[in-house]
Length: 363
Image 1 (cartoon, rainbow, N blue to C red):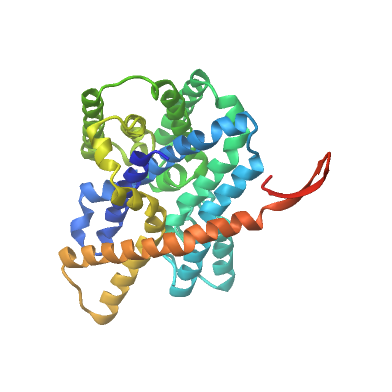
Image 2: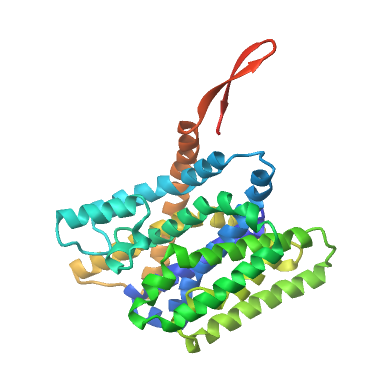
């Protein structure tokens, strides 16, 4: 496990949290908060890096199977997704539906994480809105074992990403304002290059991880990566949003991930704090739960005609979300992950010279 990258997850989850707080108070309509959607881009690129880090050699050397990989990914995302989907179905989702048949269609699409493939907000933001990104992750996970034999080369990956970038820039330029979110923000196919950027980063990481880099140089690089990201982030208001949804942030996000993956500087030492690592571990729960808490609060304030100042309400909502995320991670996510893996593990019979041995394996 790379502790620094785990810790960084909670910071980018907080950016997404801040981006959704505009429903609480208009102060969060400021660019600094609304631009928090970059957290999703970070997670997509990081996903490519971590998946390659954990599985690339194993899949190429056939020490693990595609089925093992897919089962592990299914066990990671589906239990909490299905739980939050059922909660959303009970308390009312993000979008209103025109009837029972319409509700069922949206529910089925959300259940199987197909909602981001439909270019309509009433689909991709239905029920638990943040789960659209899981539909993208699902496509990434499906593709990875199939394409990694062809992408295990920096040069090939750079060429593929350069071609993708050219097509993306042309497509983004030609897309109307009302369609950019459907085609360039939530569409799993157009977000696939983000994942491949992460896979490419892992190829660079393999070349750099054994290089001797001094503590002071590493600290300077980490500081520079953060400064560059903040520069891109604060200047983003002048860039059309369609580009900011993906490729605009490739460079700063990539440098953040690559440099901090080496874990050799002073800021990396700070990020290796146990509490920050726990924060990163619960970030998936935090991401899927936070909007429930925010929307529940806004419904209550509308129903009872009262509202706390945001300086009070937002910290309270944040603390509640953290507590629920901790409970979810330790008492639901981890047990459910093990349970799903066990369910999909089948017994095989191995013939040995001295008899037959039953052994549980995940194929």
